[in-house]
Length: 211
Image 1 (spheres, one colour):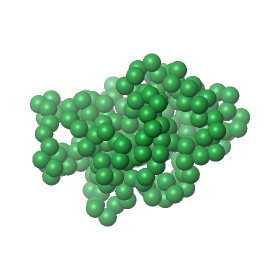
Image 2 (cartoon, rainbow, N blue to C red):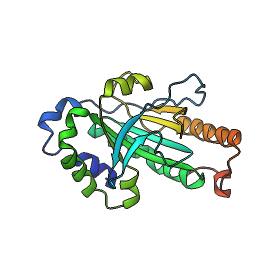
Image 3 (cartoon, one colour):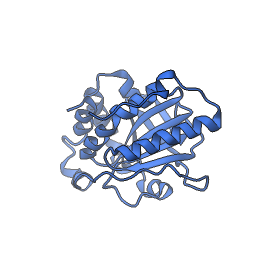
Image 4 (cartoon, helix red, strand yellow):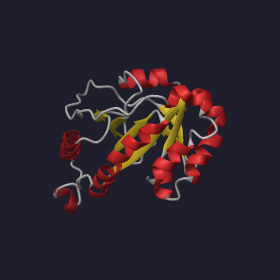
């Protein structure tokens, strides 16, 4: 089990009885990504969160990359699905200057009163300071958030390639799938070409394959 998986699972310890509806659904299958997101596609909505390193962030403005991969999870068990993506996403980010990866555990605003306890449990499970800095917990009204992103339900993790200004350039849902990852690579390459941004020599090679 990965450090990030242990951390997200710590979220449900003493609050599990009060959060059964949040944690109940079974993992969703992989779904195909979309590399043809148009300029009329939804933008990432403005939300406030805090990283496990203690930094308050107003997203998408405070994303650090010119391009940002935001991985949204709604339920504890979905960390397993997140972990199917992370090796490939982090390898891609290492090859592409200006590309950052974020995990966004997303909870109802009603849990904000327990934020210190929940975030503290997650923080203790993640000794890696870089992972803490890239894990941003959101305690929000999820209805407008999901409506803005056209998310029908919470049974799948959601992945978004987001420009700093909020425009979404690719999206996918569910566990890692090779075709969705290939579409992500194409979307990153197309954005780099349009923006004139460079890439490392390693990025011109093949991306890491899943284990």
